Length: 147
Image (cartoon, rainbow, N blue to C red; front, top):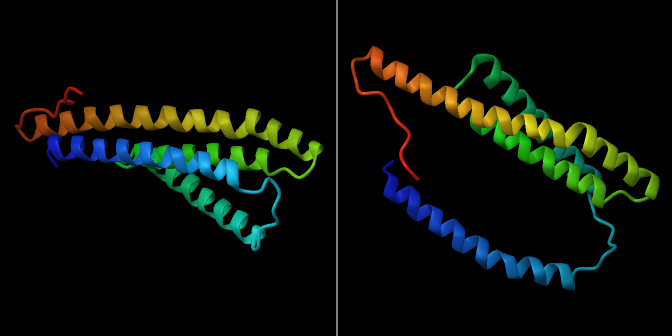
């Protein structure tokens, strides 16, 4: 994929973000603060199952230093931040909120930071690996493009 379509998609996402912001304000004003959710247990179990899959994918990619390590680590880090947020804001009692805050501060957010580091490091390893592969094949090494 060339740089031009990627930049166009960047503008599309910028517009989507701008259009979504008023919707978030509307929801924050209009939605009730307290509401029971049907299938609450299924929602959390499903999310946590997805988190287990993301952690396993990140583990596998890191052990192999695979090409998809940056993506797996970014997904896992994002899921950890989302998990921490919803654990804290949906805690039903003050005691459970303190436990959620402690888990967020001591486990989920630091691990999300490690995932971010893995995503960036994995991207650098991938670029270096592509450069080495190209040199072995007698091609010009792949260089990152200017932003």
